[in-house]
Length: 328
Image 1 (cartoon, rainbow, N blue to C red):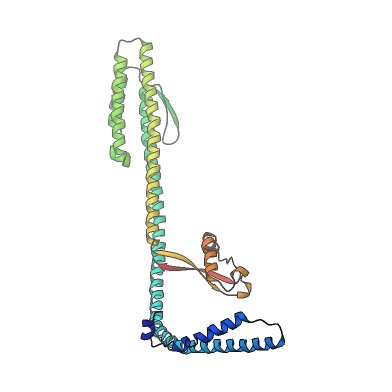
Image 2 (cartoon, rainbow, N blue to C red):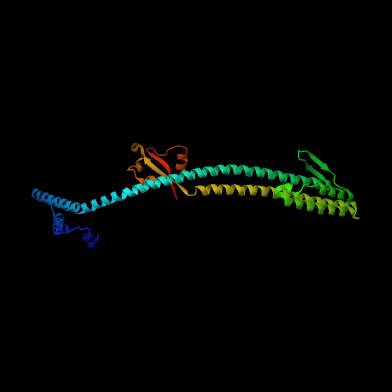
């Protein structure tokens, strides 16, 4: 503390400084003292009494000098704490209301999340049904065109030998053209259904061209077999692509729902606090109670503590941990 500050606070240290010479003298006496007989011991005892008396006198003067400072500090703390205590109470009140609202909002969001997840699962099931229907119709069309097996809606397995003349191929195309469902009936697969029908039309034309050609029957069969293999391969790829697209859509929607719930709770921080309920049961290394050690314990074991508190358990005897929510 500088002399200017002491002057402003009206603190006079002249009394203490006036004792400097006596202090140094007593320090020298203590250093030089040699006790070899009873008389020297008595002198040492007298000197010790002088040291104690002077130390007590200086300490009493220190207390006297600092009393106005302590009184002023106490007064300032009392005056300011009146308002800070009120503000702390107001902070707890409004924080509690915000936390309460956040809890309610989060609960509502979770309820909405569950409803939306169920709706997403239902849409996924509907879309999967649309996928299965489109693939079933495609399989049936090509079974009639090139021969093969397909599964009906009721699970019945059916087969067809395929067309053998250009006229049969042309008649099949006309029948499919007249009966193929409208694109909008396939929902999110409307565009895909249009593409599948266009591919079928092109493949019908290819089959008719092969059957009309002057090639030997063996050559025709080879071309038709190659075409059939290409159509089967593309059908397998189509099944995988449509199945993956449905799964990705559901997964993305689920992630979006979870992100919305997290956003609601983001403004609330969970802090582990504690209070001593039975000091006799507190572990020895945590006695005093050393708040730094307890807070360090709670920091290191945060996840275990949260899990324990969730199950209404207290991991340390004598100390009650609890979660205090504060607004960030």
